[in-house]
Image (tube, rainbow, N blue to C red; front, top):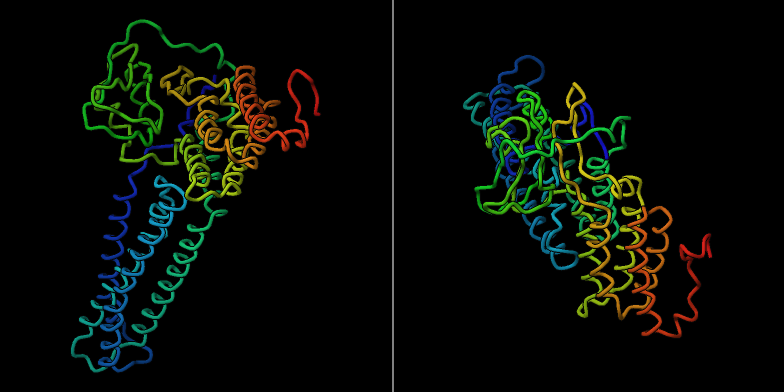
Length: 418
């Protein structure tokens, strides 16, 4: 059981990607407007012919808008590629900040160019600062566009995609399963009496994306209550479903619901299950009869092994719910977390079924399950042993020659490494 003391709410609620993208576009458009009005007023230093500078600014301003076509063309290309080659749930490129920063900067640059050209008006000369600033902004635009193209290229290649999923999954695991820093964690309990209030979901079905731990903790501290959330990030909130129970003192539903960020699809920030789902989807698609690429499935299983064998995932084996304490040390928020067994079932079970005709993937699954056994908790070892026995039965029955030639792997009963 993990208790996070004051300051332990590691993943605060964030604005959704769409709201942040719109805000950035508005701010950069306003910045371009202000800069376009101020730069032509600079005096002193060398001058340049105003008419020629204005013509270049107008042409550049409308030409830069063409980059928006490039950006959305890349979006359509990469999203469609990821949908058909990896999984329709993969949204790494669409949600990448570089996409919307480049789009917002192109809008800001276009606004600057047109505004500066209008501000020059009928002047005969203008400071050379205008073309210099324009050139600097254009170079910045080209730098962003280059970064965007490189990101798009890496988003349609298998190895970078698997690495990105693994890294984001590891970060989510570290966030949701931090190292236990409270020596009194095992002594903390939550009142098992009837709840003072129950919070239900009254909106259309949505996915719980993030929880503002700090906001919940402060609300519970002020009311001297304990909030027990029954939904983990990544879970679906359906109309009428129970979201939370409040013990000790009632807290308004709007306070609890206001600390939850929801959307149409899960995100990586607080949902480690998403990484396992994506890796399993990639392996399943690779093992489908239309693609038949077992090497890709084996590569996805390598990433699965990294996640399942990491220290945060091992802590999930016996971690239980996440308990967040206030400044007085009293537990204020209890959040349900997925168990290690859920990670194994999500990441491996469907792959075993799909790999029954692939000796390469069955062999990799057998090795993965054997490698995970030593560090797993007792219940986890039983789960791994059952799946390992399943894989070995299928290998022995379907590929007897390969099974006889396969090197032995250790069993817990045998002890040591065989």
